[in-house]
Each structure stands twice: as structure tokens, then as C-alpha cells.
Length: 117
Image (cartoon, rainbow, N blue to C red; front, top):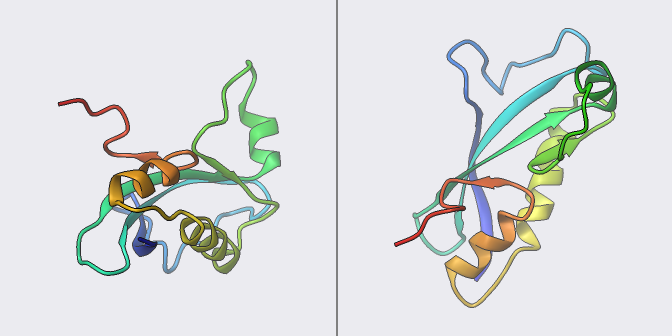
């Protein structure tokens, strides 16, 4: 089973991913939301990732922090970000969706990450 990105957006009422351009492309952070699911069905799960630059980290992180669920880029280039996310998702495969979803969650924050029955 292979996964694909079915949609991508910014979790903001005022920012649209299609038209977003940061004030400084070399110093920004942006939470991007994704709907990812099997390539052979309509179903999907929600994930999110913080996309930021090293300059943003340098100016905003003062204390030691973990860097999970982050994609660090040199500058804002939507096509590069989308390609990076698509390439990562395409590498995640398995015999069933639960296995694939957990592989994706190694780098993207998954809505069901800590879910227990």
C-alpha cells in the first residue's frame, strides 16, 4: 500500500497556501496541514508539519528544544516544500494503512499518534 498527499493547506483563516509569500523568504515559519491517505481509496488522515528556516530558528529558539515534526528549508519555495513532502510520503509504504500511517508520523504530526482504544 502506498500513501499520497490528497490536500495541503495552512491552518489559518487569513493565510492561503496558494498565495502565501512570507515577508522574508529566508526567515519564516509556517504550520502546514496535510490530508494523506492510501492511493487506492478516498480515505485520509490529517498530519501537520512546521516548515521553517534556520534563520527563524536562530532568532526564535533560545532554550534547548526538540525538533520533531519540522521541515527546515533554506528559504520559502512552495514547490520545493511540496516536492519534499510528496517524496517523503511516497517512500512510506506497507501492507496496511496503520503501518504506513505510523511511518509517515515519524516526521509529520499525526492526528492519531497517541490514540489508544
